[in-house]
Image 1 (tube, helix red, strand yellow):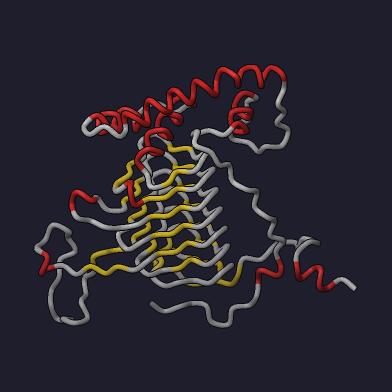
Image 2: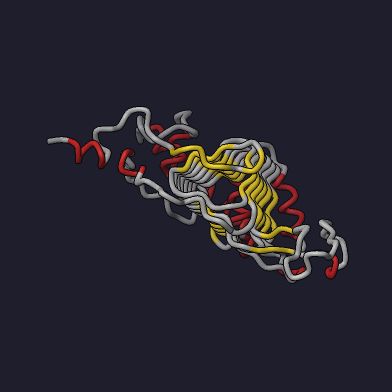
Length: 300
């Protein structure tokens, strides 16, 4: 597909890009820091202001072992054929809240190829082809998201890799048949659809042949294209946008709502719609931070 990266300035020099904190690591679904934040009513806030008080430490001496037991039980049941299907249905629609997040996290930690610590999997999330999906730490997979990386029982293949600090908004759909990689600190807003494979109405080898867009049509009447999709760190994809196979969204690019993305866009691009997307300038700071490379270079 055509690339939109022509005449790209080095916009990154205008931004101060702070180092990312190391993500939490550990077997337990929730880190000690997240538990402390929860005890102090700041589960969705930053770590600033969190104190390990005597009361908090006392409570954690009971909470942490209990979490290990609960997670271990769920982990074991998730490995048992037939039982795991009933368990999946139960945890998927368990109400939102600490217990729901714990049960879903424990279940999917057992099933996914990788699940990082402090990642919240919300109510109604569907995951197909769990063994082909990696999710990093401190992510939020919001309500009714669908991740589809192919179901091995049907001979399907695919791959979805999410980095750390990723948010997939409510109703987002990521189809990884052709491979999807979403890097750290990316946001997909509500109802964004990402397809690394898609039926098409035109087959270049047979341009005069009428094709069906239905996936239930006979194979000879369909034509599917595949291509890896990459969304690089700090990028944001707006509400109800559609990303099609073979596309790369560059680092820190902003895709506005209702865009159809069929070509790649470079880092820091400002991408607008509605409909077929086009680039409209660059993502630039309103005021340059004194720590930005361009500001430092301008100082005597």
